Amino acid sequence: MSTDIRLGVIGGSGVYEMSGVEIVQNHEIHTPFGQTSDRVVETTIGGRTVMFLPRHGRGHRLLPQEIPYRANVFAMKQLGATHLLAISAVGIMREEIKPGDMIVPDQLFDRTRGVRESTFFGDGVVGHVMFADPFCDELRNLVAASAESQGATVHSGGTYVCMEGPAFSTRAESHFYRESVKPAVIGMTAIPEAKLAREAEMCYALLATGTDYDCWHESEEDVSVEAIVKVLHENAELANRIVQDVAARLPQTSDCECLSAAEFAIITDRASIPEEAKDRLRVLYGKYLD
Image 1 (cartoon, rainbow, N blue to C red):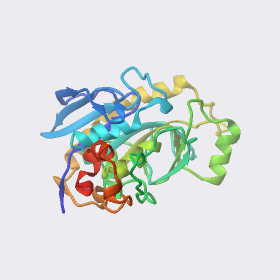
Image 2 (tube, one colour):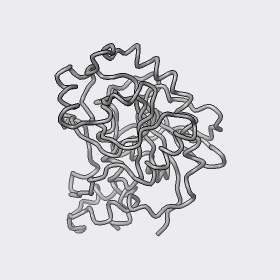
Image 3 (tube, rainbow, N blue to C red):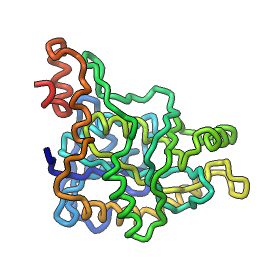
Image 4 (cartoon, helix red, strand yellow):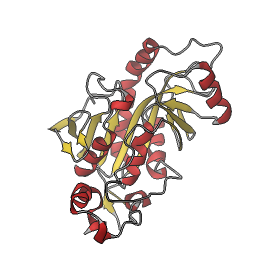
C-alpha cells in the first residue's frame, strides 16, 4: 500500500539553517525517549513540508555519545516523516575521494561500544528488524542524483565505519579500517541513527561530506578541527541546495519495503506486552499492537 511521503532532515555541523525556505513552525517535542537535540523546524520547500533537526543541537552542544538518537527519530516519526535524510561530516578513507566531495554510502560497519541506546524495543517488547542493507536504495539513489545535479562530486556506494569518538582515530586504527574493512568514509553518528530509522519504518539515506583524510594519508596533514570546520562552511550552501533538490524530486507516494520493515518484527505475544509499553510504542507500532 502506498504511503504519502514527508521528508525529515537530520543535519550535522554547518547545516543548521536552510536558506530560501519558508519556516512554518518550530516544534519542541518531548518523547517517551526524552527530549530531542533541539527544536524541529517545520519548513515548506516548493510547496512540500520538510522538517529539519540539528543533530548536535544549535551551537554544536552534544557529543556523538550524547545525542538523543531515539528521541530524534521518534519525533520525526511523530511529525509524520516517512523519509529521513541524514547529513554528516566524515573522514575520507579512499584516495580517490577528496575533501569537499559528497559520499552516499550503501553499507555500515559498527565500531561503537554499545553505550548508545540503539533500539526502541525492550522493556517488555522483543523485536528484530532486518538490517542487512541499512540504507534505503530508493532514497539513496535519489540523493546521489540530486547531489550530482547541484554540481557536487559524488561517490555513490561504499561503507561508512561508525566509530565511538569523540577523539579521532589513532594512526593504527585508521590503517586497520583501511586494510580490513576497506571503507569509503568514517564518522561518529550513523549508528544508531540508521538502526532506529529502520525500526521506525522510515526510508533512510545519508549524504556525507568528506572533510579530511583521517590520519592514514602520508602526504596530507593529519585531521584537525580547523580543517574540518573550513570544509563544513564551504559545503553548507551546497548541502542545502541538495536538500531542496531532494525535496523537489521525491514522489508524492511510496510503497518502499522500508515503510513496513517492522511488520513481522515483534515476536512478543501481544497479550504479554504491558499497556505501558504499548503506549510508549504506539506512534511507531500502533497498527501492529492494537
